[in-house]
Image (cartoon, rainbow, N blue to C red):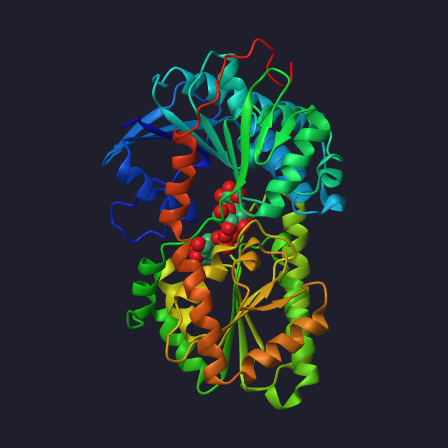
Amino acid sequence: MPRLVVVSNRVAIPDPTGKGSAGGLAVALKEAFQAYQGLWFGWSGRVSSHPSPEPKMVDKGNVHYALMDLAPIDRQEYYNGFANRALWPNMHYRLGLSEFSRADYAGYLRVNRSFANALGQMIRPDDLIWVHDYHLIPLAAELRALGVTNRIGYFHHIPWPAPEVFGTLPGSRELLRAIADYDLVGVQTDLDADNLRRAIVQEVGATQQGVELTTANGHQTRVKGFPIGIDVKGFQQLARRPPTHRIVKQTLASLVSRNLIIGVDRLDYSKGIPERMEAFERFLVANPDQRGHVTFLQIAPTSRSEVPEYVSLSRATSETLGRINGSLGEPGWVPIHYVTTAYPRSVLANLYRIARVGLVTPMRDGMNLVAKEYVAAQDPEDPGVLVLSKFAGAAQQLTDALIVNPNDKFEVAEAIRDAIHMDRDERKERWRRMMKAIQDYDVSWWAASFLKDLSDYRGMSKVRSRIPVGQ
Ligand SMILES: O=P(O)(O)OC[C@H]1O[C@H](O[C@H]2O[C@H](CO)[C@@H](O)[C@H](O)[C@H]2O)[C@H](O)[C@@H](O)[C@@H]1O
Ligand SMILES: O=c1ccn([C@@H]2O[C@H](COP(=O)(O)OP(=O)(O)O)[C@@H](O)[C@H]2O)c(=O)[nH]1
């Protein structure tokens, strides 16, 4: 059995108390690491003025964690800058927000190179290497340039936009060349896969046969959709537990007999939070009988707060919230409850189960695990209704949600109305079909099918003679 080497920007070390809120990737990889001996390499999350070029090693269970600190300039240029101010908005179709800077791009390439230098020394000949996320696209190219011939896979968690959109980003062709140095590239949906294959053919001159692409140097790359799933059973168990957390008890007490609508998202412009608040406002204006009978709880943990666009979003969201609560609220009833704290998954599971409507309306989203968690948490005998944006990857699988265009607040308002009034039989039938979709493609399926495809790779991962990107 080969060793599994996972590389990601954020590394989730298990919380010894077991109480911490595990991130999506940590849960997703937990099972993969049970089947393989593992090494997980990435950023420690710490910034230090003189970071060591060697990782700090931490051992937990059968996984070795190799953690790299970043210098302040690296964090700024690589994470806040190129990854989150240029790539993230471009890949979420927000070209007006995409800020390219040559210095940031150079910082992005520099961090990828220093990660490759540190990781390259730890690689054994049979290791399977699995890289995650847009922060690390050039990593395989850098490893190849160091002589690493192992099988290397990459999973892209966010949307891959149409070639015409990605092509607007300076450096995009170089990044496409770099991505072709992976042996297997996984994306969330078939549409993402089609977009990426078209771009590699158009910009790098690769030839295509089905999901296989061959570049001029003879390297074969397979680009396929592997929709990420959740730990359905684990989430169901959490949701069935009686509410003990103060926040859940308080929410229940404050609802009295009102219906709860819930939204849970990082405070990110891709999630459409102010737009969703305005759709809820429209719902209340169009359905005055519902005023005082429904509460919308939006949980929106602060995210990437050093990036200017996120600061503006935070301000705009608070303004929208204040305006709506001021104009439609009544003594004893606040229409929208808004919190920017992150809650543990156990609390979310209880809240999802209480909520009559799950409102998941991103403007664009790779997958959106919250949509799947909301479904998993429901009471089979009295399930709530999921209202889901057509632009979330999850909409490709959860076709029994009420699918909406988040740009149309009238349409979203009507879906909220339909969800509130939907009879129990229809709710049960829709829920049953959505449950089947998330059970058939859960997180174990995701990790196992990606790793099987990567293990089966029989192409030749030759050392590149060409210069790595950015030189
Ligand atoms: O690490 P941060 O900058 O705080 O951001 C949090 C994570 O956001 C992104 O998540 C994506 O992956 C999810 C799971 O595949 C998917 O459901 C979602 O649609 C994506 O937005 C990002 O890809 C991660 O790197 C971040 O850690
Ligand atoms: O207060 C919070 C808000 C979110 N989450 C978790 O964060 C993940 C968000 O994943 P998603 O794919 O929906 O969006 P992302 O933030 O990765 O873009 C989900 O597993 C949520 O349960 C959490 O643990 N606490």
